[in-house]
Image (cartoon, rainbow, N blue to C red; front, side, top):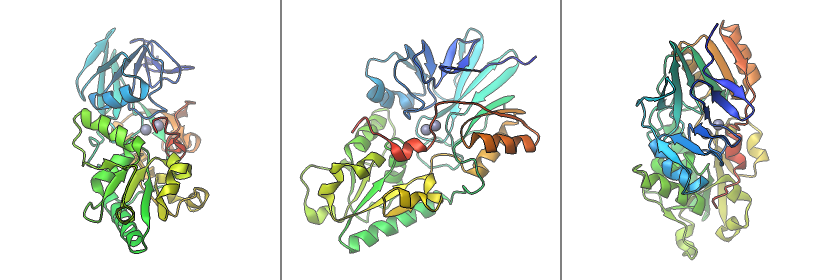
Length: 340
Ligand SMILES: [Zn+2]
Ligand SMILES: [Zn+2]
């Protein structure tokens, strides 16, 4: 009988041999956190283990006094005989896949991941294993991403067009990961780039952790009208529906998200433009990642879990969907920005 290195419990993913949870959604004594997005990194754990790049954001979001230890990529930590290591997931800065080895078995929990190198996060690295626990946020064949360079060209063109019409460009993006990815890659020669407070705070936390980020400043409370219409402002999704945006009129709004790939989503989301930019793997990426692990057994945690696991079974793998409280990129559109 196979040794189970992960059990799916009411509190979250649990490794009984090491007595530690991974991204639990209920308060537990010990938790490994794959990355600092709010559906994976929750409040109330007595002990947290994460990659060093997640540290300042976790402290900023969960409290400066949390008990947190960090583990760099590829370094091994042994707990009750279980060897634990973190490997780049390419999702956002610091995002990690968790590899657990015990008694000749190796299980990998991916957290969220993407395969395209975004030149901000450490690029995804496949980890050979027996059992792979994957997300499937965009686990349908309709989701195919263009390379990010062409998406940034679209954003640059939209920004320039807005300038010509005398409108401020307000681009909504999840404040951790997506926002910094945009700041790093849009063309700063077009005009000034300003950040909503939530994005500025998260960026600052990442900078404190040593991530070399392009300096973009927080939107000042008093700002010259001629300056503002030339600018690109990066804000969390919740800001588009808040009073904050009113003082920036006239403006044009955009959303950068994988969901923009689907016609109709854009219309429902009250933004003028949609840019298809995701920090999750597309259909091709999910399939490549699963294949690269060589795993025979796959658990699918969030997204299109039923259809993706069915597809994997048709390919001859042992695949099963599991219920979790991870939200995928849904959180990205409805982010409540507790850090506004
Ligand atoms: Zn995430
Ligand atoms: Zn997620």
